[in-house]
Image 1 (tube, rainbow, N blue to C red):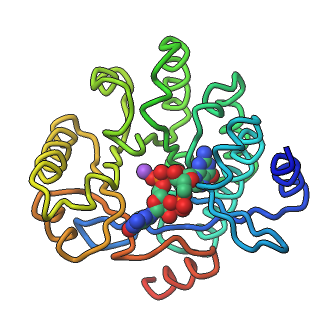
Image 2 (image 1 turned 90 degrees about the vertical axis):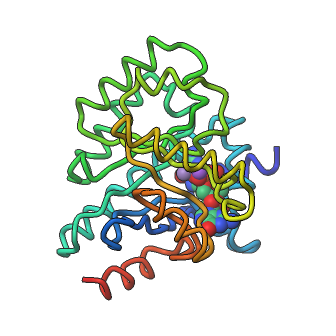
Image 3 (image 1 turned 90 degrees about the horizontal axis):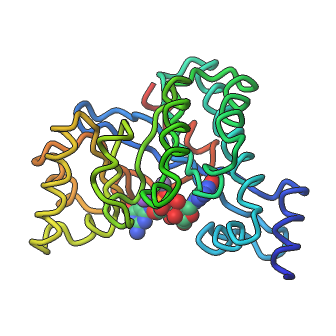
Amino acid sequence: LNMEINLRKALERGEFRVFYQPIVNLKNGTVFGMESLVRWIHPEWGMISPGEFIPLAEETGLIVPIGNWVLKQACVQNKEWQRQGYAPLVVSVNISAIQFHQLNFVQIVMDALDESGLSPDLLCLEITENIAMNNVPYILDTMQKLKLLGVRISIDDFGTGYSSLSYLKRFRVHTLKIDQSFIRDVTSDEDNAAIVTALIAMSHRLKIKSLAEGVETQDQLEFLISQGCDEIQGYVFSKPMPASEFEYMIKENK
Ligand code: G
Ligand code: G
Ligand code: MN
Ligand code: NA
């Protein structure tokens, strides 16, 4: 209960920050965009990772206002970088299943786009397979509305959820984010190598982009290039960083 009160206060006091981790296009080596990852900077405790507070935020429903704030912040920041003349970047935002199932979710996305002035194709919503577990008609309808808005959709942590592959046919997504658990031992574990190879090939056949997460080593990177993976994200390139550092990085690449 104490923690819930603290989390509520954090929102009021503006203690959340959005960090950005670059997503790199392996075909041309440029920065395609970035994933928004929220951090809680507590005045006494310092930085608290979302792994520690997102589960509580989901249990208490606070994920809705927190997630809406992150979405808005990411759109405003990306628009600001566009205004400053940087090459177009696609900003990804994690959407919790609880947020997605809010009846006004599409309106929330429209408001974030309207208020920031960001072009819809420069926003990508990351959802997990688990949103598709129930109420399929609602999900299909929401996906259709989001598609009409022109925003992108990616499936996060792909391969770790509970849903079947059949929904890939029903929900037209732009990108599959191959979960980092498959990438970790991809150069030493033949099963992981087989899964990653198959997921990249499958996504190509479905005309969906493949993105490997949690890429840490040069060997993993070379394996992914050899398999034709489209994009990567991971410490081999950069950790998530504050907006100011991200801006410094894209300035150097300008
Ligand atoms: O950086 P990392 O420790 O950044 O993130 C830990 C977990 O928290 C990941 O599973 C990530 O998807 C999740 N996460 C980070 N930011 C957000 C956010 O804004 N919304 C939601 N729903 N999850 C987030
Ligand atoms: O669940 P989701 O994929 O949204 O969250 C991504 C998580 O992975 C975040 O906690 C982020 O900080 C972390 N992350 C990003 N790159 C790497 C990496 O190369 N190695 C590891 N171990 N974690 C990473
Ligand atoms: Mn994610
Ligand atoms: Na992931």
